[in-house]
Length: 334
Ligand code: SP5
Ligand code: ZN
Image (cartoon, rainbow, N blue to C red; front, side, top):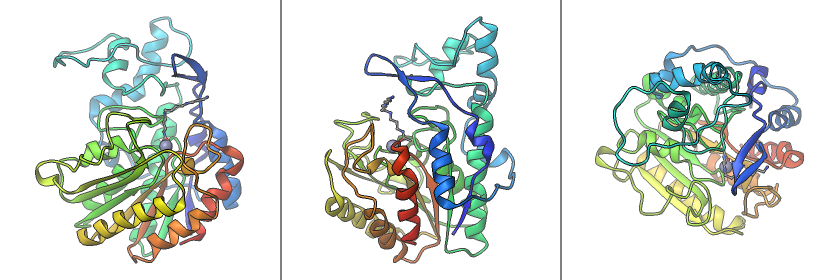
């Protein structure tokens, strides 16, 4: 299977994230991608498909923020990475924001996803890796892999969060639609619910979003991913959430994924995009499921047996010594 990755995706390296009331080392480190590239024995450089496919999903003001916030932060005399500390939760007003702190709150979901001067470039090439892998599938490959790092599924049209800036799965889904696919399905099997992807396609019936994830009652992102979230308007019934308890093992995860695949089969996609996270692994440092390395091949075979063309985009997974083997197991299942 072809795999895509650009070394410029490594440049994004925030120092720390805010978690449990204090600053801690940033978990979404460049070494994650290096471990995966090593396990794959290399990856192809993506083609530059340009910014239009990104702007087909993301708000122009948000994209401008990603590009310019680090310089504004430095101009305000700040050291370190850009991070918000005030969020416009109540009675949001449509007003022009200029202060960097106002922008950082307006365009973010959490304080765990700082921006550096290199974030835009890394996120841009992460999106290009997704678009290049999509092109491989459009050219006839049955499956292709995009080593998207930074990841994407927590990022909405106009906000970052959960280590994500550009929603690579959503960008690929929209690009597939714009290239003529009538129906696109996204299966999200990262440990965390993909709130950004759900949000982007919430009111649309042409992109089906199904997610198997840790119950938001106990896990990030807390506010989204409950079973009663099914979409709205034209999108009613095109969102499917299958939350599972901490300590879940293969049997229950596989059954939930089968439920998702049945729903996707009823939807009838032209192409399937899999948001794959290896943070469901039993030894993941920030997560609490109990999948074993060999389990990923089982899950992948279940997906592949449905027969749709598949684009796999990388999301989370933080146990670096096991990351390459977990990803290799999953891809081998195809
Ligand atoms: C793409 C993805 O998997 N994002 C996950 C975001 C989860 N954020 C909440 C948990 C953060 C825990 N961070 C601990 C860092 C220890 N140094
Ligand atoms: Zn995750």
